Length: 260
Image (cartoon, helix red, strand yellow):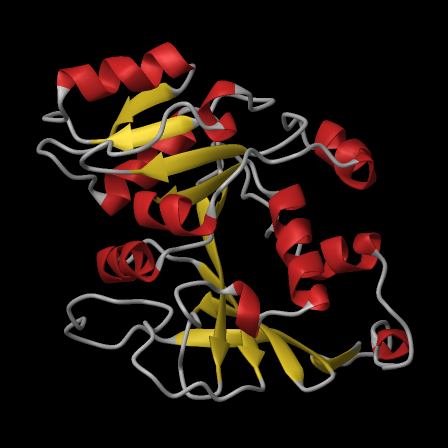
C-alpha cells in the first residue's frame, strides 16, 4: 500500500507499495479527530465501497466489490469506534454479527476508555428483526436498537427480552438522524461509525450530521441497477467535503473526506 495524499517528510516512509501496512499504522491513518476541550461532540464517520460506475453492491452485497485490504480497513475502523450504526435492511442482507474483540486494538481501546468492542446500533422503524440471532443474544456489549416512540410495544419487548437496549430517537415510527446521533452521544458514544445501508446514509447526509466519509473506490465496473452508497431525495445544496487522505493498493483507492 502507498499513500498518495498527503505526503510529508513524516509520511514519505509510508508511500512504498511493496509492503502491507500494520494494523497500528492503519489505526494511526484513520484516527478520529482529537476532541475539543470540554464536552466532546459526536463525530459520525461512514465507511462505504463503490465501483467505478457507482455501484455500492453487487447482487445485493458489498463483499464482491471489496478486497482483503478493504476488509482490514473495515476492521480497523470498527476497532476505533465506540459504536457501529447500521440500518435494519443491511443487518438482514449482510447477516450482521456482534463485533469481536481483537487483541491488536485492546490497548488502544483501554487507553481511550472504550469497551472491549464497539456496540452495534441498529436503526429500525418496524423492529422487524430476528431477535434470536447472536447479534442480539450474545454480543460482548449489548446491541442497541434505535427506533421511534410509536414503535410496536410487543416488538420493543421482544428486543429487550433478547438482551438489546432500546433507544428512542424519534417521536413517530421512524428515527430522526440528528436525534439518533445525540442519543448515542448521551450514552457516551462519541466516535460513531456507520456502515450503511445506502438509504440510512442518505438520511444522515440530508440531516447534515455526517462528518466524514471513508470511501473505497473499487476498480470494477458492474453496470446493472445497484444502489449508490447513499440514497433518498436530493439535498437542496450539495454538501462539500474535503479530501484529507488517499491510499492506494492494486488499483483500489482508500479515501477519507471530511466536512469542509
